[in-house]
Length: 202
Image 1 (cartoon, one colour):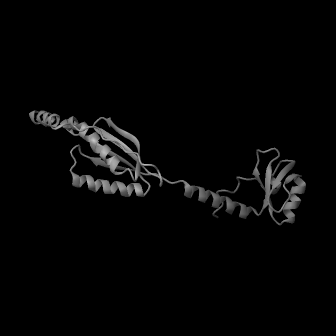
Image 2 (tube, rainbow, N blue to C red):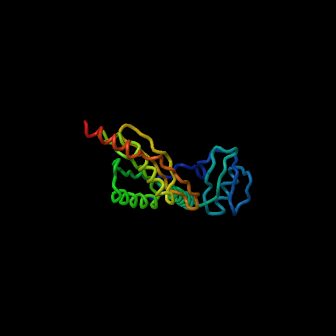
Image 3 (tube, one colour):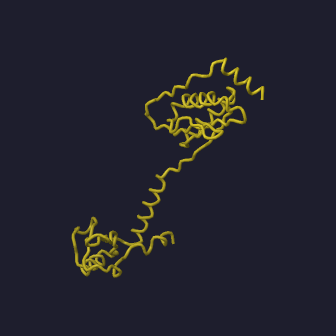
């Protein structure tokens, strides 16, 4: 049976050990009854006396058909489970010198992930001497966050961990105010040329 896993979690009828109980419900006056009188009331209603709060003083009971009670309980649990939204984290990888075509392709995917309610973890992977371009990687990630400002909020600003620089974004709730993320000043052409020269000299 569907409700077998819920059976045994509640004492019913003669299983209730308390000398008196508080009955709550619509069809019975809510007050404290001696257990014998409570059982008679349940019998008169052709239902069960179900202990729903055993730790209360005195214990709280309902007069209801036990099968119906289990069905209602299972239905509530199912509704609560449905409200618990599972959040997935989607990763998007960039290189430090990602071209516009690749960037826009990944930006489109990120928008789709965020619209589906997923978080996005974007990172720039620095291979070998490309770590010299970490500032460009940071600029790229902040541009990414800016381009997604209508879809996401920034959970974590770019942070360098080993050979990865990562930023994390969460879906923005409707009506959330915009917050611009200002990219840092890019390396000027002189510094970029010096970095490229160092790489070629290796």
